Length: 376
Image (cartoon, rainbow, N blue to C red; front, side):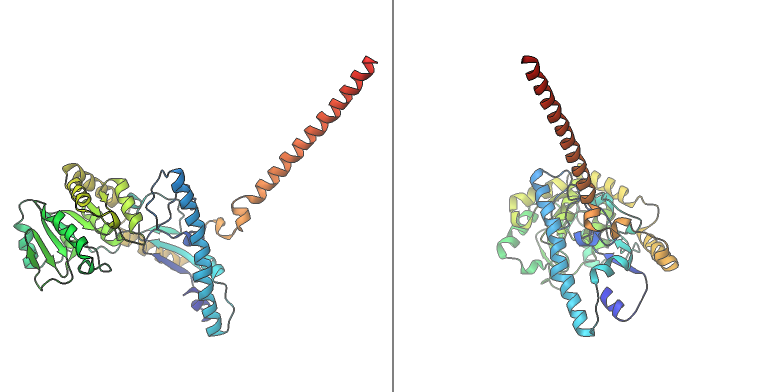
């Protein structure tokens, strides 16, 4: 998109929107530090403090993804634009010179504290509509008739639980059937008003945020998508997270790190592991912790949508005149990581060592010569 703006001569400030924690190639656009010793790559499940092996892997992935993106994505897009429009364009330079602001769909209370800049604004939760919408009558009745509360189960819109292998579905059914709580499961092959089996109500679609805010919903079984996790933390509901791909492992690890979620990776999903995780998140201690994390998450100077609006309007008012990036954005790599400074210090140390060695050699030779003269 930056290349097309350049082709059509549109010279305006650009505001980026990231749906998840920043990718390794995004940090360079505003000059953000992403030191892999303590900043996990978004596709990993690492949290601070990382072990030595995790830091080795994280460093490799940080470098690999930057090279991969530059060569497999950016250069290919650049070729497409140049061939289609018969122009020369430098997407890497445009990505640094054009972007004034990045709105990021995170908040450090659950996603972890990372180095930032004025041009990186966390707006996690700005999609939330606090206006209470009506819950379908049959779901409301199912909720209100539950003596011990309800566990909400949804793997979002991309992962269809109805297409999971049969043995995995049986694991989910067996573990959920043991609960004294009822379960509402988003299951795409359900009837118009749901399919009830034991304590499990399978529904084709559900108003997720409205249900999470319901007093009868006590926990959330989900896949770790950032929007659903944001809704859960906003509602103060503990989670069992079964991450699959993308940023889901990182989101799950971050939620577990602050204490309101238990993680069961899909490839480790068994009846025993899921039962243990559900038992943990349904404990009074976990529910209290989830409410505390929710209060910390909500404790902000302004609501996230208001924050986003303010910063967008600020960029409209001032554009590049009000610099929001760091000078690191414009520095060549060798200067940024101080290779030239390190080289200068090494040369200085080498000169000093050589000089000391030269002086010692001269003095030792002089001492030996004088000693020989005395002996003679």
